[in-house]
Image 1 (cartoon, rainbow, N blue to C red):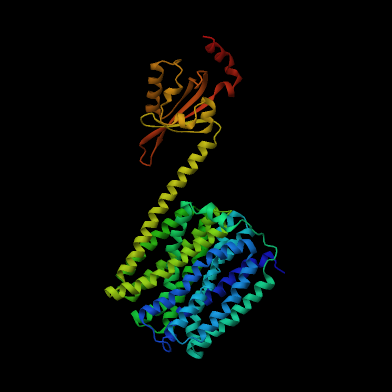
Image 2 (cartoon, rainbow, N blue to C red):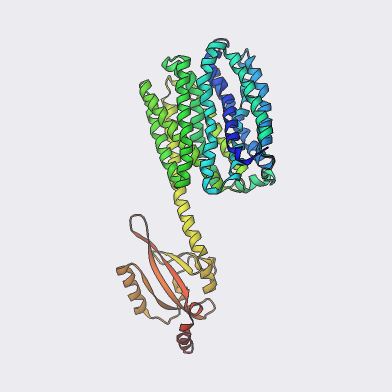
Length: 511
């Protein structure tokens, strides 16, 4: 009972079931409209409202999954879904659909449960792949979009909704029996976890990226069924098939996004993702015919799917100790990204008579995200270089072209007795011992200019006046255009590193 080997398939299938329920209203909207007349704005709100609770509830569910275990949270969520499913099946008004749809959001809110729990069973180098496999649960939306129109044609939309009662009751039972009772728990208080991450710029960047990628996925999932019927005059069944195709592409490509992020730098993958979304937004804004609109949707599906997989590779990489709360927060923001676009598109269409402005907004947000990813890559590169310098045992000093010291490492301060604050802003002259004359330094710089580096023995002077002999290595720092932007000097204390220099040092010190 509760075997760890079955947790990945159990939780993935649980996500499938939850997402099948989450999009019931949007998938059945053409049939619901035959019994409950709604305006365009009311349709937008009814189809989008499940996203609200499905987003905001992700934050506590991610935390609770870490604290109480996935088994209990999945079980309780499926039990809670029984009421809104039955309530919607009996709906007769816009208000009924709004209330039931809001509570139906629980089905979408379960996403962070598995994302938080499953990495506990696997090594870090496979987290991206595992989370991407779990995210195949998004196929639940495709299953509902594809099957529900066929079932509703035969049995009616109300009975179609009621059939979901059997689904969620079954998965409540499966999780109760097969869920892992021995899952490792994290008991750090919620407020403490929030305090430890809310100031992180990386957290909010990941939230913004997921707002675009997962938001695009959810928005197209809930908006396409009715949009394709009203705008391109497709049948409800054909619109459902096309929507299911969009979901299928985005979902099946997501594990590839996770796998690519395990194999390569996830930030590089995101650069391609946001380039794709930028171009897709432009194409959709033009939208001259169904063929080009389909091409644009396919590009969105591919880009969003890969992006969703890549982002959840980065979450445990940056926030391993706060994975529950961060997964919930990132997931919540991403879900909200699916709530606003349908309403904004409908509002803009009512105001202007077309959707071009809304799709261009997608393009511009994606372009801004691309720029931010490039900045994150630069920041990460600089952070790695800085950490390497700080950790090295040799003293390191970095200067600009004017000789001003920009950075020193702890080993430098230990060797010279100058603290970081005392050294930065000064020049290397603070170490000058007067043992070497002007000609020595002139020849040194001539060799740096001609050969690109210099290495030799130099007498320096500590803050307390004590002289010491070092092996100094100076190398220019160049930018991507091979232009020199500064210099880095590495100093090795010869007295500390070699007893062979003791006689030479003693001779000089006795002068």
